[in-house]
Image (cartoon, rainbow, N blue to C red; front, side):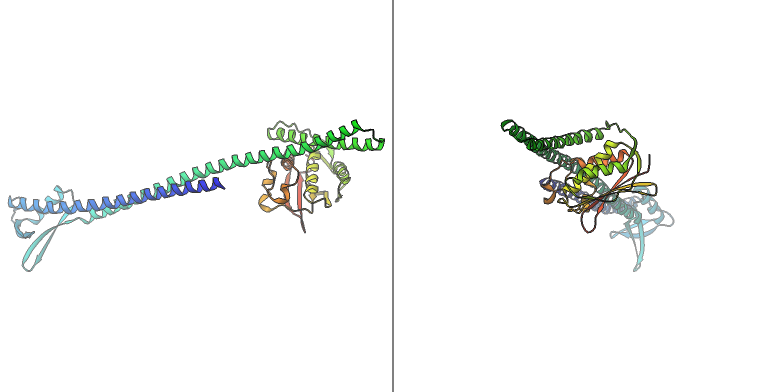
Length: 378
């Protein structure tokens, strides 16, 4: 939250700075336009004075000369010669206007319309240029800030996920280790009946298997992420594998569903079992031991494997994130549930190793459906 607030302040500061910068440049352009206009008006007066001065020196006399009044001063000039002089001397910035009013001929210097238009066009171009530059720079800096923000957020999220992973794994390791230690100490200090010893040994094996599964998941996840895992594909009876996994989980939870017989597939049996184990374990874990459904069937040229549960379900916003490494949905119902955040990551990677697809959808009336499709025998 603090990070977001800090970046919002930075963006606001940058936008305010560029807004002020743009305003200052536009204001400067307006002032420059006003100054140039004032200079033109001042030069117009200078132009009139020079015409009077040149007329008194008889520079504009010809057979067509006539008497005109300029700034209440009478001068004897040829209008054509005066026009030529003004055009050459002042680079076409001014033009002469001659009028007859009450038997008095007057002459006046005015700013040429093209000069005014040129100044206005120059002002508009500068304003447009400043606006475009400000927008482009603002967008570039905003993109940079957002890029930094997302990078920092990614690092924070990754660090948080790794911390959650370490906490989860520590807890997952601590429980079976403590159980094995307690059982071992009990068996060493007391003489127990044969039946009780067998029961305790079974508990030790169960916790040892739990530790083995966890370490295999961690090792497999690391190998897959770094492309070190060697997929060993062979022709397998997918129906038998699903039935075996289904029978194993049926010992601790109701597992239902329809499995078509003799569905053959060319794949890695270890990865296939890992896919099934992780999906079914998650289904049981997040459905409060409600019955889980497993379906395996052929659909045209595809093999479809479905795992359905009646649990808490997965919000649509999390459906793409749940396959990321270490990711766990942050709500009260899932936070207290055991897990390392590697199960669905391994499932996704294993499915992709077989060029399959996995889709998450809502189960009716409640729960989640994980649907995997394989393209027949590869």
